[in-house]
Length: 307
View (cartoon, rainbow, N blue to C red):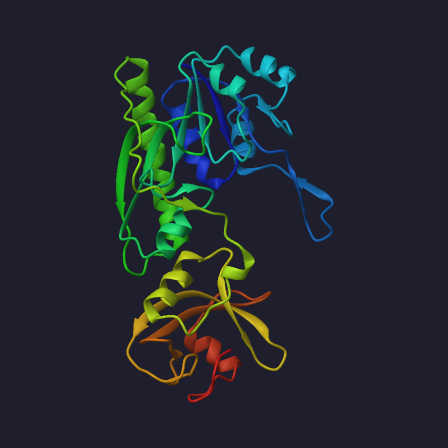
């Protein structure tokens, strides 16, 4: 089939590779424009999808917006059978959604209608969900409201981080989209409307959510740590300069005291109920390190309190 691919981050790369590997004709790749990078922000770095598309020799387009008749005409000129959208980052106007002969398919990282929106992977873990999935959805004007064609369920382990789930999901999702396109090509991809109940919105992660609140139950603290790992990272201030320390990995532990109390010399921290042990941490400008290594360079004695 003639396919327009629309995606930007690492998450979208396996799906583009899968489509090319299955022999489809990718007539255009739409991605976000190169972003400033480097210490002074003077270098423009192409998106991961942009870089891979160039290696495949595919034509790349980086419009700042898809609004307007000129953008719609340019999109229609590709004469695509279908558009595949994976974490693109721009809103698709109705004229774009209507352009491909078979519509636009979106790969979404949740079991719709739960966790529609920008941060489904993080929100699922932060909420303590034990299962999520990837879905291939027919796009429409609403936010992730379209009917679903295929779903693959993915268990969430008790210590799984958002980064680990992301990496597993993008591989499973690529295969799912490949199967969906094969079914669509032979006319065998049916779509089921999403139920009206069970809708949850995965809002963008705000900075205020990233500071660890030790007064919460240990399970909530643990879920927030792993749901924000590795990026943007849950953190707490340490020392007189209140330097931010990210916690990238934790486990549930036993113990009780005032919230934030350091219970032992293994970085077990009391929470509002129960405790968590901090397993992997990272200071600004430093590499991630285990708790034992961290404690060799930072004074966090038992009995002290973390803010």
